[in-house]
Image (cartoon, rainbow, N blue to C red; front, side, top):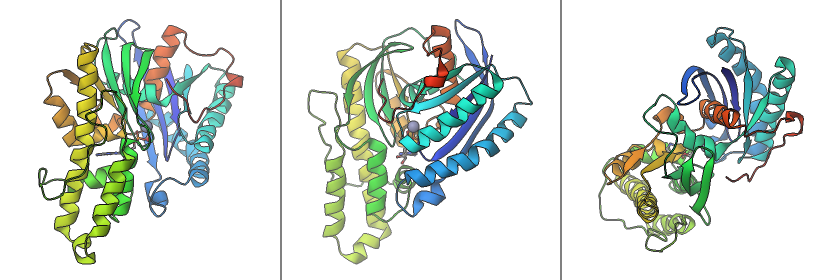
Length: 339
Ligand code: KG4
Ligand code: ZN
């Protein structure tokens, strides 16, 4: 089966064409996986400007589709998949309307996909060692979401904890803005955080000792702001301060994410931890998670940040399980969609 997948929930315009093989233990061949980043456009705002992002998606989608179809060598499309949430409302509509036009044109089913589930199932791309029936704890950490899920199998997720304020990626982004480093903050901070373990700055690890599985990152952001403001203009601009700060911000976020996820895995006797979302592109986070005493899965780095291949893979499982509405004309987006 050939699936055409579309993802426009935030500032990346993504189209993928994937080929599926098998039903019991499906494998996926990625024929095309294109991501057109709007980072430069939004950098001056220090975050994503939704109506501008929507216009860019509308402009980019037809161009990227042409390229994707060329890369897939004109293979006939059997199914169309599109992200309907969560995300930025105008951006989601740009993708959904484009997908509906295509579903009409190709006369093929359209499957609406949950972006968070797709970040989890990104682990099944280019891998076959993950069984599809297991008890796992999934941590999704992105720019818009931080959530812990108990996963009994594909399509069976129970939210057990989430952020009470900012998402982990959002904290990286806001911290970078405070330090005047640009957008998106995660990759910039992780590059600067090479001297891990410098102890001169100590930031809080919010909620780390609480018994629940929830997170809070806005207090960390405030602590970063206070520390920055307390320094002289000379120190604020110094490489030493910025590097130490970057290392401490990264470590504070990693400490909380690992502690809470490991606690959940132990409490629920999970067989594995499954990571997903843009923050999982962080090498130090991956490294420190892998040192833990539990089996940890993380997608290939290129499938951590937003992409449409993960949307196609998720849609295929929904298709196999019959988890999609038959009347696609009535599908709408849901900016706050949960799983
Ligand atoms: O999943 P994603 O591409 O988009 C959303 O669904 O939000 O995640 C984007 C987030 C941004 O906040 C970005 O700063 C963060 O992922 N990110 C990283 C890294 N690469 C991207 N955070 C930490 N380290 C990275 N290497
Ligand atoms: Zn995402």
